[in-house]
Image 1 (cartoon, rainbow, N blue to C red):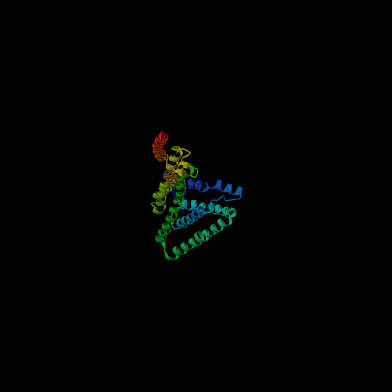
Image 2: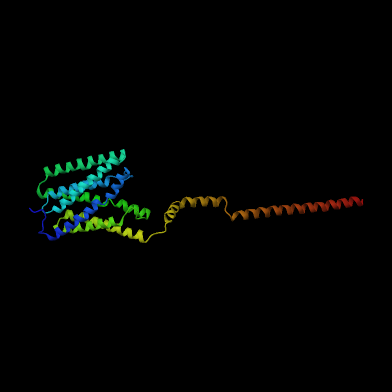
Length: 291
């Protein structure tokens, strides 16, 4: 059997294009790990995406061995296993002890224990096309997990209103890659290859839309401070209500005026009483003087 099946021309073309683009996608973390190697620290990066990507590539490689005329699917996933292993090895070399232990546990649980379990079950319990379908279904599940990983980045972009954490070039590359592999799956009439790339295309398109919205339709830079103040608005409103009940600017003058009026009326009344008494006293003194 030839290495490259050229009987299905479209499958060969899309598979070759998919290999080229996916090579670029697999190599995209190289600058990050070069910085890790240079600084001798992982800088808080997580290993989970690389562990999941390694597991996904391993599963797709196993699936490709159950199919015919999918050599281009073998090449890209073999390269994926190779490069992801290098990334994880570098991570283990420079990660803190806690992150390192977590990565080892994930590798043992997922990439060793999980894959060995799937391999034993599929090899001994299923045969022929049924085995390929079972493995294909598992591959679809994990591919969806890999494609759903950018959801955390999308949430960060919406929350921070910044595209700093979502490079447009990477989002565009992932979207094109999903489209190419979708066409490859359709050309092979392989549902398990085509379906997860539909989700990849949708999520990739969503990332690019968000990039355009938050890059070229930017909100004012102080919007973050306004949001913080808005979040605290109920507390501030309560304080203003309390202040209003204690020292409102309007009732105070009224209270003062009323008190002044009351005091003035009392003083005037007392003054009138004293005047009357003085008049009486004056009359009495005058009558006494007359007598």
